[in-house]
Image 1 (cartoon, rainbow, N blue to C red):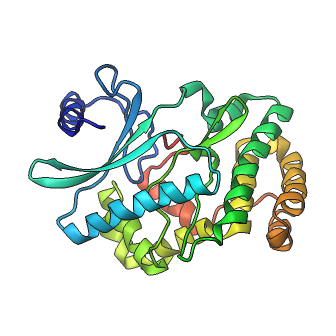
Image 2 (cartoon, rainbow, N blue to C red):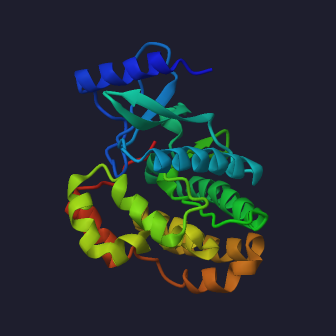
Amino acid sequence: MTDLAALAETIRRHEAAQGQPISRLGYFCAPFRPAEGPFADRVIKVYRGMDDAAMLERLAAAHDDYVAALLETGVPMPETAFHLLEMEGARVPVIVQEALPEASLMRPLMQVAPRDETLAMMEAAGQVIARFWNAADRFDTRIGFHPSIRNFAIVDGVAMFYDTFPPLIHYSRDEMGRMLLLFSEKRLMRLIGPFMKARVTGIQDEWYSPPETLVGLVGSACRLRPEHAEAYLSWGRDFAAREMPRWADEAIAGMQEAPRLPGYWTGFRKLLGLQGEPNV
């Protein structure tokens, strides 16, 4: 059982020391791994606190349900726990997750590995995507998945998924759009986001679409290693027909050429200074 007092103290010490996060992406938070202490084998993700107790309780319940759903559909994951910590008079959402070896993170591996090894990693991640969507209709609720390259690690040939926030379960499209604004670590996004609500809300649509999650994975690979784009596109078309036949036509149509990020999302990334670092 997690020692919440020790967890709170670990977070306070990290903030006081202004330690370096292990990811610079930081849309929702900057995860960190303590150098010592009881959580030295864990990654800690601290999100924005809220005054709305009902919202936080719903968030905690949704996160528990989402982790359970991912595991039920066969998505390999490190041990993951969600807590609402009392800190400085506020309740703060915190995720504590078993740390994966830094050398196993898929994105940096994809950047340097030979073509055939990158294709093996794509197959491992694709199998997780297919496994999730082929089983997801057992849930009588809106559920999504965000299997980008930066959200996987490759451990002994298995793609481990580790991004559980926001929990993509139970929330309507409009509610999830508000979540993207409320929990953004970037104050600028929280200020300008409401004026571009439709576009912010649209960020999530790929996460709830089986073919688009596969197309998104292939598109990321093509951007990382453009010299191998044709190999990735060929793999993606074959994989869709082989492992995701229900959505093959739409997925294959999206992989005739290297997929591109929507213009509004690349614009947000530039505006906020976000980089494609692993979101561990």
